[in-house]
Amino acid sequence: MTMKNLSFLLLLMLISMESILAQGNRPIFEEMPGMVSYTYRDSFSKDVSATLDTLQAMGIKDMEFSNLFGKTAAELRKLLDERDMYCSSFGVGYADLVNKTQEVAENAKTLGAKFVRVAWIPHEAPFDLADAERAIADFNKAGKILEEEHDLTFCYHNHGYEFYPYEDGTLFDYLMDQTDPEYVSYEIDILWTFFPGVDPAALINKYPDRFKLMHLKDLKKGVEGNMSGGTPKENDVVLGTGQLDLPSILKAAKEAGIEHFYIEDESPVYYRQVPKSIDYLQGLKY
Image (cartoon, rainbow, N blue to C red):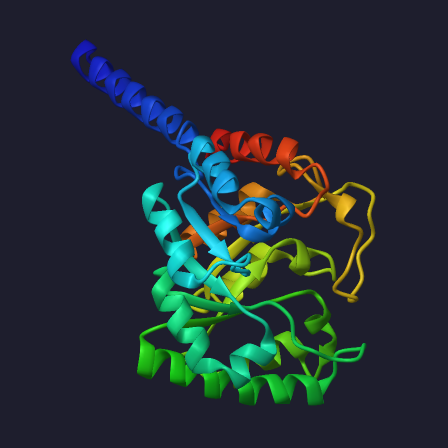
């Protein structure tokens, strides 16, 4: 090998190494996460304006509201606009989705939201096929109204109880199969996916086109899950300090094109945990 060829080979190796190192330093999660109003529910219940000031100071812009906290949608929208913040998703109860679809749509549009979300299907445990079939019919009907009449996307947020075995899969698979993808999308809550024993990254990869939103949360180490859809609020911990494999989940979410990521921390000390969770997310590298 001539000296010229050797120099060229060394140059190629150097470029390759630089490329590998650069890839290893790329952030997994580049944006500021959004926030679910439920995280700051106690604070919002006392003073909406002051709570929004706190979130604005942290750099939060993207909000998912599941409560108007005594305000009209227009009043809340004004407070958001004044702080250069916005509401991308509006969470409502199952009964309101079904019985007050038009009112829900008007409030969502006034807030500026593009998504309407439901996080719980009323049922007596255990969740069963009849519960799933009722929800499928209601979600398809309401989702069609929201999409065709109001240009809003309906999302169902899983809560853990939907993963009972059914046929070759689970009742959650049945929900996915029977809801019309044109009218029904999903918000994946990664804790309530992991808690009943399902890998959130694998579920996203299984249904890459159905998940539009994500709740970011982590489960305290040592806590065993089940399909109840409930666990003590103290079991919500700082992202990256619990049991969930956040890097793998976020990589799958990014590849699937999930549009909004909201921190949901139900812990009593959420105000101490949230800044640490944000730091963790923004420090993740490939």
